[in-house]
Amino acid sequence: MPWAALSDPVAIVAVVIAYVWLAVASVVLAVIDVRTHRLPNAWVLPGYPVLGGLLLVACLAGAPWSSLLRAAVGGAALFVFYLLLRAAGGGMGGGDVKLAGVLGMALGWAGWSALAVGAVAGFVFGGVYGALLLATRRASRRTAVAFGPWMLLGAWTGILLGADVADRLGL
Image (tube, rainbow, N blue to C red; front, side, top):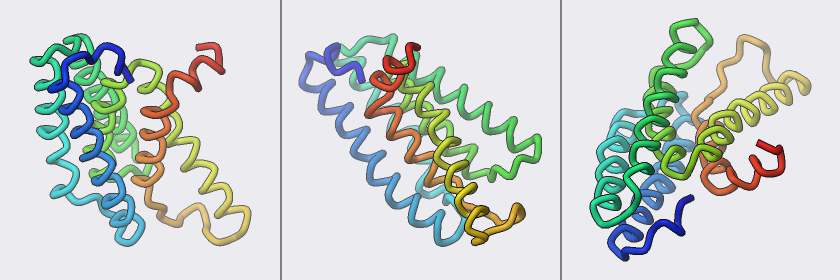
């Protein structure tokens, strides 16, 4: 996360509020998705103006505009990627697609390494979980599994550890 680039207290507070909002929404969305296999618009869609608005405030207060551009590119990239997966019939739900855009914004703000690690980590975590379910015969290949929690865990892995993971992998 480009904390070193944040010298203005208003920028710091705006970014902290953005990520705290995302943390709260992450817990709520993960619980809802596990229980219902749905990611409700009432929790997902506000992420766009909340994160976008707070990150814009951070830039107006002195954070690098390149961070906001990276957040926009990250959000658009993950949204389009998940939309293509959904169109291909890969089992992604519409909520996953909408959530991907929000997570892409948060990951993009945190950096390119965070975006790359966070995008991939969700699939790794979800894949390992699915493989364990199959191996223990607790599920079949047709069993629906909520993917939102794995997207969220992957995103937080990217946000918190993305640069370190990328460095260890030599990326």
